[in-house]
Image 1: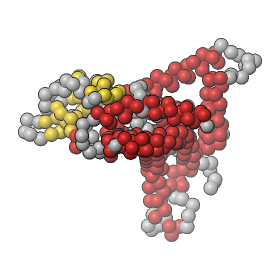
Image 2: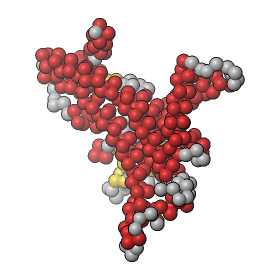
Image 3: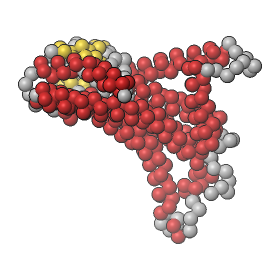
Image 4: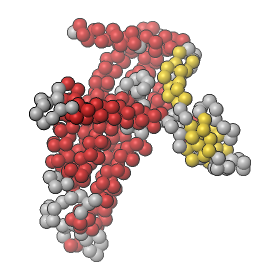
Length: 347
């Protein structure tokens, strides 16, 4: 009980700057949906903190190609070239105003917040696995099993490798797909965990970005369909169902072919929706603090206590969800890949 009280006290102290900001903010209606969507969306700068209307942000490199002249421009949000502007109606994306008055979307290769977060995740994963590899390099087969951090990483790797990949893909094929599936698992897990850190260099909603989950789902779709055996394609175009379901109207083949696209689509939406919803709920409870203190001190104290309890609960829940979503995406990918390597005559 004393530990819970200490945690609540620390959280109240940590949230004190938010209370001061709420007291000093200009009069106006607090638009919680707008604030939440703004923090969930990608951006061309990394917002770190705000105080008394002043924003501390890290500008990120903007790389755009003009549709009018074909010239490449390298800049930041504070030095956007003439003719380019941020369109608030399209989530703050960069648009170019042409000479005829029309507006077009230029080729945009900018390093956005999500891209920068992915680079940070990659650096973290490289550091973790190179340090583990260095530990194994200094030992031989007669050495004791690793303990501590290296032992924890080995436990996670072997759990995913043996209980998920090997059992789902099959004994004969799992070795080819283990590197990809392990990479996907640790990438999603690291993105989820670092995304829960509320301050720089964390907080970016990478797996809650539909573009990232779309790419991961496409990678799984390629692994399934590019390397699927003849039995897999036979079950799609000539499944084991009564003939009247296949000719003259190919009802079941059409349904099976449709499933080729719905499987990766389900992977994409499941990861995207779960992670975005979790971040949205946490941000919403954080905004309740601003809402309460903008109404009055009494409401502020009551809503503060409620928000702290819910934030504790939601952050603990999101820690679990971070592991669960990485596990589920890897498990379903392994199952779908295993189905693409069915043995002849297997049902």
